[in-house]
Length: 415
Ligand SMILES: Nc1ncnc2c1ncn2[C@@H]1O[C@H](COP(=O)(O)OP(=O)(O)OP(=O)(O)O)[C@@H](O)[C@H]1O
Ligand SMILES: [Mg+2]
Image 1 (cartoon, protein in one colour):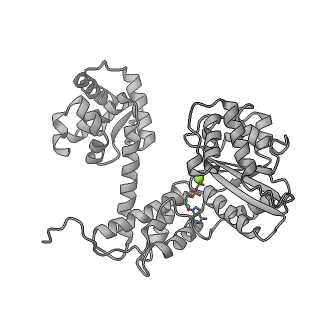
Image 2 (tube, rainbow, N blue to C red):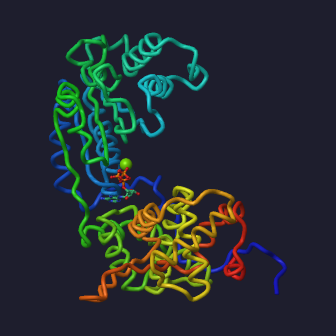
């Protein structure tokens, strides 16, 4: 056997990175209607007219960000030949920018040279805002071309993560055109959100400014997902590396995950990884199946790690019962074991009603399977519970907690 730990072997991939979320495709498939509408909304900018504020919304993974980047790249490139208008765009992700102050600093620093950044704190709000307006105003201003119209399209992606009140920067940015806040630039704001209730949660004034035009991105159907996957697979995999059923299988999975292209692409990559781990050059449907298990396992593990600690104790209790072959188990059985886990952890146990609620929540998360036992007249109705995933997966998900609480003898062999 070779004594090397790392060695390149066979691979089905030509360019695996093309399946990552950061990759921007050159062309978009399956979004014709959205692209047509979006292009219409962007049309005034082409003519050097006041740009629309556009609000783009739809569920996660339906191409909102990808389409926006694609269209703005094309818009900037295609209008470069018109001397009387300049279009520049800036893409900001508001995730983590909960205050208007942080949004303004981020915009300013994105527009400034690396050696000229402003610090994250220590400024008054008005000072930061002034610097931001100055940076936007100067973005495309050229003193040699005083008559040129400079249009700035500001994309605020995941806009629901930031402040949205009537004194927020979001509102001021969406009103800047009307208020003549800027001297040299005309600004259009493009807000993007996967929160379908976001627009209706805004005050009427903010909503009417930010959402002058609204664009809804529908979920992908299985055929559209196949198109997306095929286009990406051409770049990411070697010729003939995918067996026939692989793409339809990944697309069907993406469709089940509410038409999410990101999930479908992630699965295709996971299937490729599994094939590569096996030293193969071709990806088969069985690799997709294993990929689904892996992706779902990771989701459950992530989900469990963020749960309330007593909810984790419940699932720990259920895991120990399962290890003893005592599942499906009724609420009372789970509760008794849960009390034991609490004793081990040295904390007071909660009521059995709370435990029932936790079990319901765990069932919704997909960590626990609930069986509704209806024994008809006289037999009554009750629920039984068991783990929805293999014990090893659950023990991995709970490892931090088990370390704190201590190991129950029944699960020792699963760690
Ligand atoms: N029509 C498409 N053609 C090619 N690739 C696409 C298409 N739609 C989505 N993708 C790819 O799917 C992934 C998810 O798309 P995107 O990031 O645009 O979703 P989103 O709607 O912005 O989701 P979120 O709300 O979670 O931010 C990206 O990797 C993107 O490149
Ligand atoms: Mg996005």
